[in-house]
Image 1: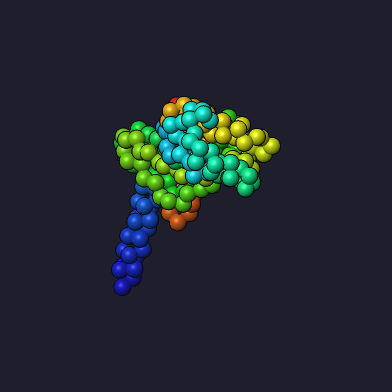
Image 2: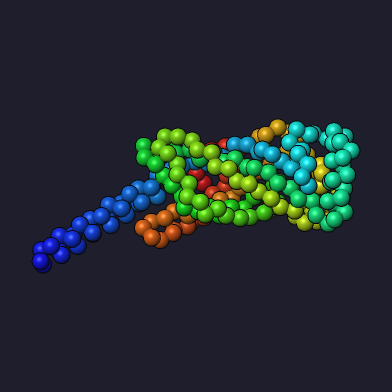
Length: 196
């Protein structure tokens, strides 16, 4: 009976060690992963799709009315989908269990948030991570005129789908056993791949 308990305890310890080794390997793999901002999609200002518009003159009368009503209603909501590429150069997978982020345009913080969805990064592949962002442009850039705010949003969306003026600070969390371990500092994600 004693040998049965000893074997069971040994088996449980080995299972825990192997599981921890796998998770530590994923942490090491994650440290080698690289990230970049890939694209911006579905840019909407007060519900108006401005993705393909490059100047105020291209906005229709109905949409101008929507934008003016939103502005006069003391808000100008901007929503977009930001696609982040995560490249895993490792021969085995990596994963993160959560992601805290800060979204910036021209070094101005627009919004911050987090996702608690587990994200698996397969070996030797690039995975796209979509983030849906929504914030009040009028609140963030308080004191600016309606035209200045609309032009700011158009400059963001009108130059195509490449996020040249954008940056994302991201702090991943990795699960080790039952503990969630946050990355020691924020990664600065821009349009070129980086792991820093």
